[in-house]
Image (tube, rainbow, N blue to C red; front, side, top):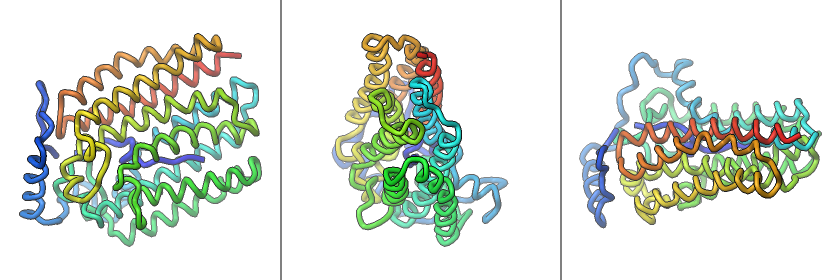
Length: 347
C-alpha cells in the first residue's frame, strides 16, 4: 500500500513574487525573507477569498481538498509494481486493485492532513504561491477536514485487510507506517516536512515502499527488479516536491518550515532536481544494458520534457513554477506508463 504527500505532490500550486525569462535570482541572505516576513506581519493570516463558483462545504470544496492532480503519485508506483509482477509471471489483479485503492485513499488522507496542519502552522496564508487550499480559503473548517481525514483512513481498512490476508504481517506494517507518515508529514510533534525530511519521505514511500509493496502482494517476495524499478518512480515523485519547495522557500521561512530548499538555497534545489532526473533515466539504461530489458528505454521519449522542465526551474521563480510543478507530475505519470509497458514487454 502506498501514499504520498503531494505537496509532495504532486499537485500544482499559486501567487507570486515571480519572474520569468532570464529568471529570478535567489535572494541574498535574508533579503527575500525580510520582505516576506514584513508582508506577513502587515497582512496577517487572513485566508484568501474562496475561488469563484465553489461554495463552502460543497462537494466541489471536498474535491478541491482531495487534490485529484496529486493522485498520479499514488497511481504511478502501483502501476510499476504491478508491471514488475507481470514481467516475472506473478501478476494478481485483486491485490493490485486493492493496492491501488489503498494508495489513493492514503494519498487523499495525507492531502487532508496537509491542508489542515499547514494552515494551523501558518504555512498556508493568503500569500500562498500554490493553488487554493480548502481550509485556508474558508471552504472547509479544520474540524470538517479532520473528520474527513478519519473517514478516509477508515475507508482504507477493507483494502488493508484484503492485502494483509494476502501478504501477511509485512503489509500491516507497511499500511500503518504509510498512514502515520502521511499524517506526520505536516502534523504531530515533529512534522517531517518542516525539518527537511520531506524529500526522503517521498522517495521512500512513493518509491521504495509503494513499488516494492505492490510487487510483494502479488509475488510474495520483493525481487531485485522491484527495487530497481522503485528508484526512478521515487526520484521523479521527489522532483515534484523539489519544485514545490523551491517555489515556496520564502513563505516557508516565515512559517518555520525548514525544507531543503530553505536550508540549502534555490541553487541546491535546482541541482537536486537535476540529480533526481539523472537517477530516473539511468535506471532503464542500466536495465537495458545489464539485463537486456531494452523496452524499458521507452521512457527516453520523456527525456526532452524533463530537460525543458529543468530549464524552467533553473530560470524561473514565483507563479510560473506552478506550471513546472504540474508538468513534473505529468512527467511522472508518462514515465510510469512507458516504464510499465517496457517492463511488461520483457516476457
